[in-house]
Amino acid sequence: MAIDMKEVIAEAAATLLFEKKVKKLTVKDIVEECNITRQAFYYHFEGIPELMRWVLEQNSEKVLEECFAQEDWESGLHYFFSFAVNALPYVERSMQSNYGAEIERMMTEIIYDFSRRAMERTDMYREYSPFDQQLILRYHCQAIMGLLRGWTEEDTKNMDHIVHRVFQLLQGKISPF
Figure (cartoon, rainbow, N blue to C red):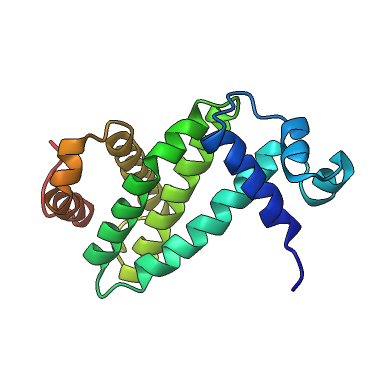
C-alpha cells in the first residue's frame, strides 16, 4: 500500500500540537517528527499555513458531506455543531500556536462555506439579492463562530435546544433581537 506522505506530515504536525503541545510549530519540528527531509516537506506543502489549510479542507469536506447526508437540514446543523464542539479542544490548541490567526480565518471560511452550501441546497434566502445573501451568510457565520468561541459545558448539555434555536434564526422564524 502506498504511503500518503501528506497524511504522514499532517499526523506529525498534529502530534506536535496536541500531544507534545508545541506552541511554535516549525517545519524543522515536523520533519524531525516524521523523519523526512525539509525538501520532502516542501515537495508536498509550500509551508505550514498550506499544511493547515489542507488538513482543514480534508476534514471539512468529510464533515460537510455527512451534514448533508442527514435526514433534514436541522439534523445536519446538529451534526455540524456536534463535530465542532468535539473539535474545540484541538481548535483551541491550534489557535494557541503561531498560526492561530491563520487557523481562525480558515475556520471562518469553512463555516461560511457550510452556510453557503446549505443555503443553496435548501433555497433559503432565495428572495434576496446575491449581495444580501452574502451579507446574511457573513452575519450567520460570525454568529456561529461567536457561539463556538464562548462554548461552555452548559451549552453542551443544551445543544439540542441551541441548535434548534439557531436553525430557527437561520430560517427567520425568530429574530436575533
